[in-house]
Image (cartoon, rainbow, N blue to C red; front, side, top):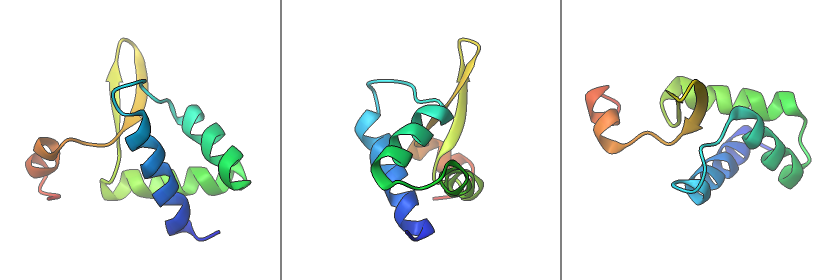
Length: 81
């Protein structure tokens, strides 16, 4: 499976779960590995690439980190939109 396809699946999963649950990296790995059958390293690389380009971001709250889709305000502030 292409890297871009995996990234699209990750993004779709994050959109689906938005507002329902704060997703940790391992939650995303488990869901995407189950859906695609890909190895953890492949999914991890796709997620890291998405974080590097600003398509998704880490957030911290309550002593735990999570991965989420950045808001438009955040993207404008960082000059990514």
